[in-house]
Every structure is written in C-alpha cells, then in structure tokens.
Image (cartoon, rainbow, N blue to C red):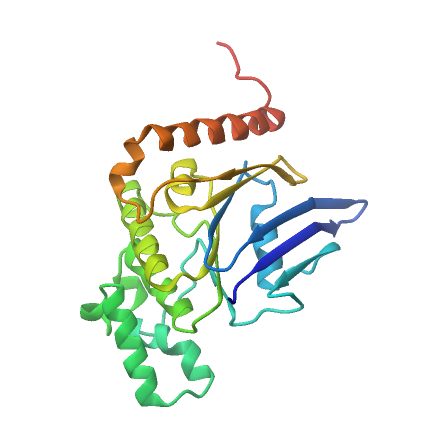
Length: 263
C-alpha cells in the first residue's frame, strides 16, 4: 500500500550570523499506510519543521525522510499539505480554487468539473461554488483548502495545525469532517497539533516531542474503537490517554517556562 512515511534520525539546523541552531535532532517516526498519526509538543519544538521536511520544503541536515522507500528531495503532489492559514487564492472562486491542481496538470475540463463537484458535495460547499474566500467563514475556507489538496489524490496528507485558527465549536466540527474523510479514503495522515484532545480523538498513534531542539520523547498507541464519535471523549480510556499526554507535555513546558510563578 502507498503512503508509508519513515523519518529516521532526522536533524535540521539553520545557520545564523554567529551560530548554528538545531530545530530538531534525532527525530525518528513512522506513519504506516492508511494510518492517522499525530505529532504534539510545546511551541517551538520543531513540529512544523518535521512536517515541512516530509513535504519536501526543508531538506534534512542529517538523517533521512522516505515515502514508500523513496527519499524526499522536493515537494510533490503525492504529499498534500494543509496549513493553519487557509492559503487560498483570494481572486478565485471556491470552484476555481479547488480546480487549481488538476487544471495545472492539464486534466480534461469535463473531468475537472466532475471531480470538483464531487468534493464540493463532500465538503458541503455546493451552494458556495461561486463565492470568493473572503465571503466564507473560517471553517468553510479550511474545507476549501482541504478539498483543494484531496482532489490531487495524494498518498500522504500532511496537516500542520489546520484548525488552530478556528473557534472551539468549528474546530470540533472540522475534526469530525476530517475523520469522516479519512474513514472513506484512508489516506496516510500526519497531523500536527497543540490540542491533546484533538490528537487523541483523531489518531491511531501520537508522538510527543521534547522541547527544542525537538526529538521524540514518547509514543502512545491510541487503542480506541473506530469509527469514533463525539461521545468517546467521555470514555475513561480516552481521558486516561489525555492525562498521560498532558503530563508528558507539561514536563517539557516546565523546561521552557520554568515552574509556575507564585503571587
């Protein structure tokens, strides 16, 4: 099966005026074909750097990143990226934004229309096909961004805090949208988030990163029944996973921020 991601001993450094700064060091993780995996950690630990390396935007300084045993050397449509910011073309309609990928590959216009209509229906956006991004809510814009990636049929979906800018209710709704899509397509997914509840709800496995320079601190297999519904958040096993993840991340936060101040 396609979409098997392996990150092995990854290190990425950036050179400034006077010194070299390591963003991540010795990161090893795996996303098996059809798995949903999350990466969590404190701000600045290098989560986005890891996902950008898998996307092909940032080359490794040391170590390697492969998808289906092929080294990553550049961006490719087989790895679709959904960012926290919506990254839509403001001068294009919803339809035209979603059609951008197939059109840039010279796909037949009839096939493009059929495919875009399919994703408009899937995302509940049919009535908004002729709207522009500025006319949409945040959640709707992110659905357009997701459809624009999925229409290219990537083997791997890389999601970098895609719901971070959304309000709490919209965020929960989008989590359920993503889970429904994953259940129907079973793309391999690596999902970066700060939200522990979100990571447990969505994932087969969660990697926790250390404070910068980030490495893998611990790994949790999330053995909760699928398909998952909102009420699973009340399950004792779910709450136990949340507690363990919270404690692991809190320990790293204290390394960065120090102990809580007293007043």
